[in-house]
Length: 240
Image (cartoon, rainbow, N blue to C red; front, side, top):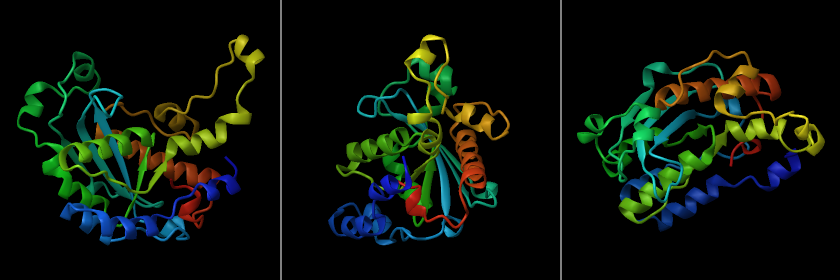
């Protein structure tokens, strides 16, 4: 995506939050939206960022559920490890043997865990005034919005910088091998989290732990900006 296209598709989150503050009914959502969103022309170096990763029982937000959330506040200069948080969440859907194997979160761990409705206030306090950074926004934003809709009948909206999308801008589209190259076994460049990190010389981490993946995503954005952008880039050029 070129810069003109990115700007054309860039939402005005400041106006969106103003409108949502007047239409939201749940008091937790009202407080969150009334706190406002960062102005679109704010330099990224001045934006409060928070990396978020959500682990789920599957990939369909309408059928599957959140089982854990990891949060890591950071800036382009440092990750605030002392302020990170990790929550195991009691899912709406049943755990499957596949999800237990993947995330290593068992039935005994979720038996006393709070539901997303109980954690919502704490979660929104963590996100207030920040831009959320994720690797594949359809999971984090999709599952959170669907879970909030399930519990309180409203959807949750918030600005996101998607590190997977930033990699796709660089390595997908015109930069990908054509059909002849693919027939010869040349594969498209992977933009998965672990593979993306390798391109920047970042260390390998064990995947599928929400807090570890949140930290990995924060490091990836720092590396992406240092390599391809300028710290003064307007946040509107990167968010969605």
